[in-house]
Each structure stands twice: as structure tokens, then as C-alpha cells.
Length: 486
Image (tube, rainbow, N blue to C red):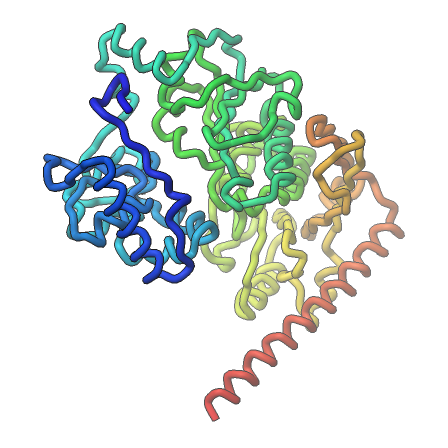
């Protein structure tokens, strides 16, 4: 097979390589490529250089196994310093292959047979260094092409010149369901929520990942889905009027083209597991908005920083450009502060510290507990009276459409303050937010004192039950350790 850019192209079929055990898979990989190259009459020893992209693929495994040198090409922009992203995906897809790739150093190129590593050094993690790394910026390289050469590249990938209203938002999608990261329904929901919370008055343009099969044009009738499968790095040369904003969960393509947009809304891989908590984050920040705390610093502890920062800066909240200060220790919480807190896998010391912190705070402080894991880590049996001063905020969800992917179970966050005036303002505040694409209304309603008291008592009952279950679990773990030592 011949192509526009290469003298010859040969294609191997990875689905023909099978094996659940590592040794079997290695043997089958060697057998397959030995036969493949014999059939194609290719002798690897005749090649001056071998460049391998997606080195954790079977070809990379084969080259390491036969002790053949090659040049490693970063799988996607910024991943050389973030190999855990690929590892977590591959582990779910093909465990034996993942274990081989990891032992061969094929996620980060940590193998003596690898001569150089081509990557974009400007988008790696801060402080990243690698003596074999060779910087290459795809977008900058494309800029060096002559106009006719660039046109050839665009035509090769079938990229049309695109002319949209510049008040648009480009969404770079990912194929979560295909990779087994989430269900098909959850992939729909994650993009419905992102569009509802962040698109505002933008015209939405979807750039699908080449392996993304989602029907965005049907889910979002007012949006536009770009045709064709082509690298996102070509987008700067396709748009006549670049969109004003770009949004992605964790697509690495944004690392290369992010400079083209006024606004970049980027989450992280943790968001893939935490996106359903976004209503709690929004509600907590909405109350800060309603309380007119627009000039006070916002601190956080144990939360997803990306969700917080993006809601503060890019949603409809009146908190734009507010700085968010992350606390690494509960004991850093001081008087006259506003803190949004969440925690998972807390320990006894953290539970003790947060209760001490609550007791010593002054009346100018406000703590907002997202309680997203519903484990009431800010509660103890000995200090259950503290929960009586907590104000439960119930987040209601009402369906506005027939087919929805969002559960309708209410959620509760807790706000703590000693300031009676602020308490009154909180209990008398309410809001409603339409999430049209998700198909629900999100809202908080005023509650009477009796309704609040009942909700608090329900919280104490549930928190007591969760705490007892927690202690039972710890007791079993301790008994098991003692038994193993005997």
C-alpha cells in the first residue's frame, strides 16, 4: 500500500494477537510479527531508524522482546510525564498486555533499548526532566510548512475550512465508553452537564475523538459536530474564526492548541469519576454568591480543584476571577475564613482535627461541607451537638424531559457558621437552575424551622449509623491483623 507521505504502508492487525497469560501473549506476539515481516519481505535490520508511536502497543512489545532499538514517540501531548493515565486505561482493557508494557517501560520510555523520546516538553508536568527527551511541537512544526504543503496535509485528513461565529465553544470529546472508563449513559451525562454549566451563550461545536461514536448532533440539536476524523492539532488551520472558548475533560490535544482560545476550561482525569458531584460544588458556591461573599478569599480542603476553579471562573456564578487557596492541613483553617471542604478515606486524626477546628472558629467563618461521599467525616458520636448547628441544604432535582440520564435523588450539603445573621440568610435563601440538556431543574427551597430540625435529626441518625459501621470495619481490620500476627 502506497500513500501521499510514505513510500510504503503496511498494516498489522492487533486483534489477531491473543493470550491471557503474559508468557503466552509474548510468544504469540513474537510469532505474529515474525510471520508478518516475512510475508511483507521487511527486514528490520535494513532500517536506519524505527520510530514507534503508541509504544505500549504490540509492535513496541515485540521490539523490546527481540532487543531492537527504536525511537519512542509520546502517545499524546504531555503523557510522557503522566504515564499513569495510559496505565489506568490499559489495565482495564487488557491486563496481561498492560503488565508486559509496564515491565518493559513502554509507558514512559524507561528502557535502555529506547534511544530517544519525542515529546512536547512545554506541556509536561512542572520539573519534568529526561535526558532522552527530544522536544517537538506539532502545531509549531505545521507553521513551518509552506501554504501548499499545509493544504496537502489538511486535504489528506479531509479537513474543511470552518467558518463559525467566533462566540463559540469548542468541546474536545473523549471516547470514555469505548475505553471502559464509564458507561455509554454516563458519557452522555458528563457532556450534558458540561454544556449546561459552562456553555452559557456560546454556540457549541463538538470535535469528536476519532474513536468516539457518540451521536452529539442528536443529543444537542443546537450544536455542530465537525465532520471527519482528524487530529485536533489541525484545528488552528481549519478555523477562519477561532472559537472564543475550548472545553475538555482531559483531552491531551488541548495542550497543543490551547493558546488559540481566550478561555480554556480543562478538568482532569479525576473528573471522570467525580463529575456527578458537580451539583454539590455548584450549590456550595451559589450560596457564597447569594451571601454576597464576593470579596472574601475562598479556601478549599480535599475538593477537586478543577471543578471549583472552573465553576468560579466560567459558570454563571458571580465569582469570576476569584482566587482559590488550597489548604493541605485542616489545622491551617483560621478565623474569618470561608472554606469548602470534602474528604474521602479520612482517618481518625482528621476527624478529631476538624471537630477541634469547628469549635474554635469565630463567627465570621463559614465552612461548607460537600459531604459527597455521605460519610459525615465532620461528625463524631462525642460531638454530635455540633451537627445541630449545621444547616442542611437539600439539593432537589426535578425531571423536565422524558429520557434523562441524571438520577433524581436529592443531595445534601452542610454549612456551618456561628453567625446568627448568616444562618438566617442561608435558611431564607433559595435558587433554581435549569439544566436544559440534562433535562432537569436543580433547586434549593426555603425550609421552615421544623423542616430544618427534622433534616438535621435525619442527618444525625444517618451520620451515627455511618460512624458505627466505620468503627465496626476498623475493628474487623484490627482483629484480622492481630490474628495474622499470632
